[in-house]
Image 1: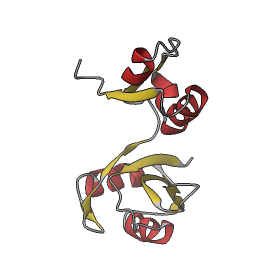
Image 2: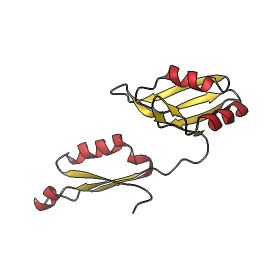
Image 3: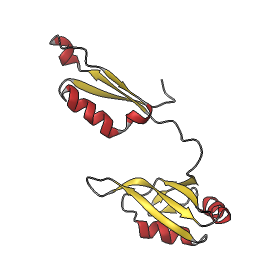
Image 4: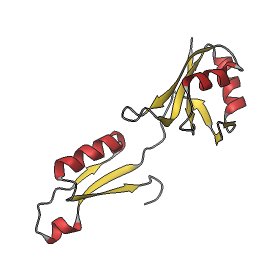
Length: 141
């Protein structure tokens, strides 16, 4: 049974082939994919690798977690289990909208909604000159 690994901290120039070659030193790689931005086609800085067995996956985690790849220190861990908390995003009315007596168009985005696309859609809905985006790290209140 294949074991899926998350690889974070990748360089923007990393490719599927480079990821495959790096993990192949630790065993049979069933698939390796760098997640890319759909608009620019550039790497988003993370990817996934499927190793054939759990032993090979454990060897890859032990050998590559914290290692340098394409000039960046990468993080490797199992892709299953609990996900780390995401940053929360809040869309608030801009100060100019408040001064002009604009409506309260605030909307709180959190968890799954905190992705940039959701924030952009909310900003377009409320008008880009009427909102500001505030990002909060989950561990810093």
